[in-house]
Image (cartoon, rainbow, N blue to C red; front, side, top):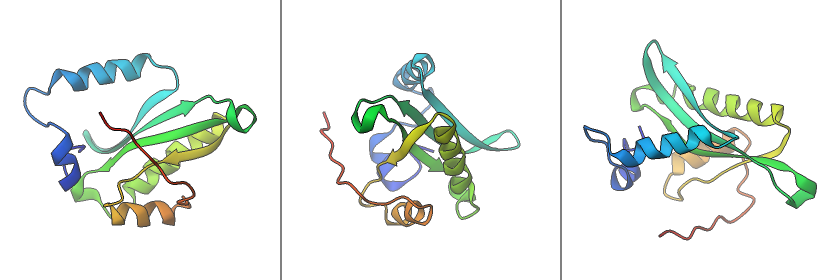
Length: 133
């Protein structure tokens, strides 16, 4: 799913066998505290996913925050509230972990994603910046 759109196809590699970098990344996620992958499934098929990371912090009086990354829904299941269910589950986990906010970034080219996040209550309150190597 990460490679199944115009932007993802340029930066991900979906091939058989799957490149080792994905296995290494998954192992690193497994051992890092506060990191999890949330899946949406239909029978035996994964139809959506996201990564949720709980981040302890010093700012805002030691507030924890939740970071959402890699939100994807299989093209055949878009428009069926799968993404909404994933985000609501991530938000519920963030609240149970006593996070003070949930944050995410979305590519400025993803107009549909921006509308989706706005509909769920996310605000474009900060300007995100990245240094890509």
